[in-house]
Amino acid sequence: MTAGSRIDARFAALRKEGRAGLVTFLTAGDPDLETSARILDGLPAAGADVIELGMPFSDPMADGPAIQAASQRALAAGMTLRKTLAMVARFRERDATTPIILMGYYNPIYVFPAPAFLDAAKAAGVDGLIVVDVPPEADDELCLPARDRGLAFIRLATPTTDDRRLPQVLANASGFVYYVSITGITGAAAPVASDVHAQVRRIKSQTQLPVAVGFGVRTPEQARTIAAGADAVVVGSALVTKLQESLGPGDKAGPGTVSGVLDLVKELGQALRTR
Image (cartoon, rainbow, N blue to C red; front, side, top):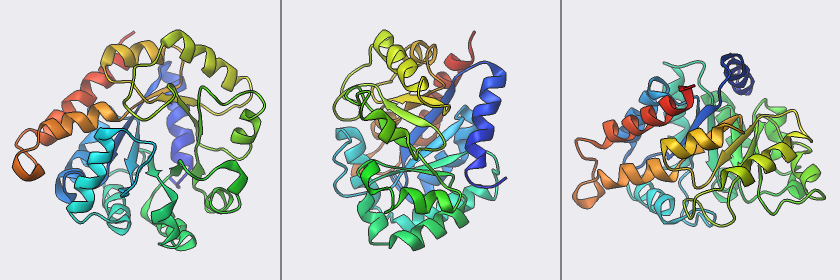
């Protein structure tokens, strides 16, 4: 199965099952490469339908304290963008079907540089990108070259994306649309389900792409409620916080780091599979 098509196949399978998908976010290399790779390998069996991997960056301005700290831990442990791609490539040796999205900021991609990054991402088995600080006005910079290589370019829509702006956001989007359910940084507040569902309906009136809802979803109960009006639910800060709470002195992985994160994924996945 080729990059990009894995996303379409997964959402088609979810529609056939009649349920919303679980999209999990964790920062690559947090708290170290070996532990991060073990968690990544366990995510599909635990219930993750789509995996977002954060590309560690020193200045993640859209993220809250939990994900900022995860980036700092990963960078301190020596994680790089090249190592992130190598981790995806190793995952692909064992899993050919679970979509993997790289999420982050343009600076590490720009210095890679961008064309070489896109080629390497495709070769590693990446399916799509979410790059939060590259707007639609700069689609020639990254979005269109990514799509030319078969990589989905997933756009963010927010509560402040009005009807005049939304068509620009959706114009070259592919894979799915990520609806940011709150204004502000990741993990800052809990979304209001009725407001979210209304916004998802508005977005879906203008695109055939699935809509995944993230930012602020922390518990299985919240995930189930949001899932009632979305194609997928994204959980990130709650997983990163669970990982952080398991760490020992010096931010070293503890005996419950891997199992703790995967157990929470199991709870979230089970909530979305419960009729």
